[in-house]
Image 1 (cartoon, helix red, strand yellow):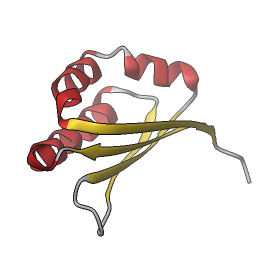
Image 2 (cartoon, rainbow, N blue to C red):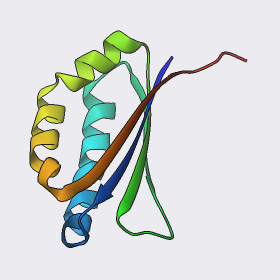
Image 3 (spheres, rainbow, N blue to C red):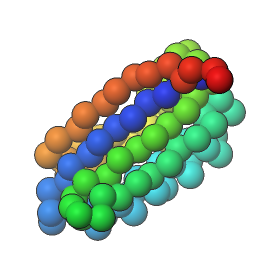
Image 4 (tube, rainbow, N blue to C red):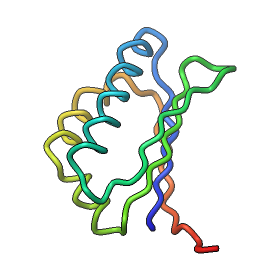
Length: 96
């Protein structure tokens, strides 16, 4: 399994619309991508402008499909101006 985490910090004036848009992006990814298994959206209770994503894909190829999907490209173009910082990590989930 291939894991992606993303920490977004949004501009305060854009936080509300970003949060609505990221929820739609999560729903679209889970519905439209058979190899997207988890797409959790988390909010920092101490900083309203921070959103953390935890995503699990079948493999790196599935994540590459995600990055090239119409819904992701549209999402990314729309929200980029709303984001002041974006930190992405790629991980492999250890089988236990």
